Image (tube, rainbow, N blue to C red; front, side, top):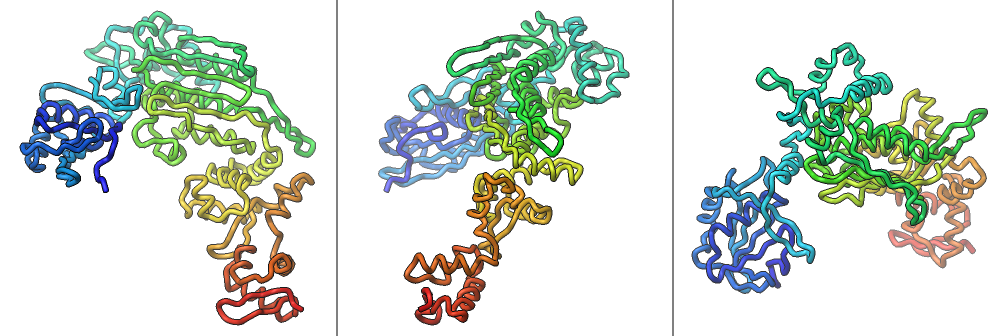
Length: 549
């Protein structure tokens, strides 16, 4: 069986070694792997996957490892080994570089990419790509870079006033309002001092820059708003404005189109919009805060019949993915800009803005926000447009009123999953919400105590579903009966029904039906036998039961 992969990919490279591959080609390939995602270089394999064998001069892995380390900056600690397949092949495993950008001693810096046909290639890494790479690795805060050809005269007084009004409107750090403009700029990091002179930072120009300054110093900063009705374009507008004005403008467009439903709540009516307003603001602010300003592109906000899409240039930073968004340590691509937005009150101060985005859907029982269309160069958020689940919204509102505080996000996630997959065990729930089973158990125990969740069975067979509170209206009553099946008082009835529908039933059948331990299933069966309702066909481990005659 072939050991070596048959095709090249972003992390697999084949190199012919029949005529002895040059050392510089090996160094180039190693550097490209280190600057991308790491990978394996196979010496002695042709581009089409044909194994032709490693050259005798490359047969010693130990010698090659030291040679590569001495010819890369910083040294790349590769692992080399001979792989015996049709012919000996040298496999060079290259780790991804987390400490910065790697170059050859001759000064070449390369990266890997996939061509249109899906095959990989090594290409030069240009300065703007280096900035992106360093920010991905959390080694560069692009927004904190000073612009030495700019001055505070490039700040727009109107935007300075907008900044102060924003602090007031969103309950930001009020102490900032006591500062003079110059002190305010320094306190927020919108300027930095060098040789006794204050130079605007990228964040400063983004927040307060005049239109001409934005175009000159941060031409990548722009946004677009699109509205579609079916396939018809209702609105399509591009703009490049100071950050606060762009956020204000996008919020205004969405607010005017955010339809509200009403939840009747006793004598009161609670508004339930298509999109939670707080979640919308966080999503827009996140897009500007985490976008890659070293890349051309724009923040795109698109409203359609199906929902809202908010996308920004720049993929997730190192350590963050679609699967761990809610559990990864908060860390932005532009820490200074993110800190400014938090201090003025626009962004979530804990850095957990994504929690607020999910919470905005969960409290209304709506489908979860979806980041699955994100790539390594773009983060794309889709918030479905769905009418709220009024019953879920009422229960959550009730519980939050009783507690005097919002429900934790983990609780909202678990309740949401139980709505979609009732009668689930801890393992199923934990897998669905991407939390540990221990964390899910804590949520379930507390939810049972508060009457939000009901449990059935015991031990490993214990399952959970939403409380009867959820099914209090007629439309859902049958759903509750069907899912609950119902309580222990009905266990005998359910066992008899099972026996009537089958020639024989076993202890395991009953345990599976009722989600109880085998010992409890046995006791229930024995009681029915004693009452004459069932009869045991045989005894012992393989007992079968049928309706009594």
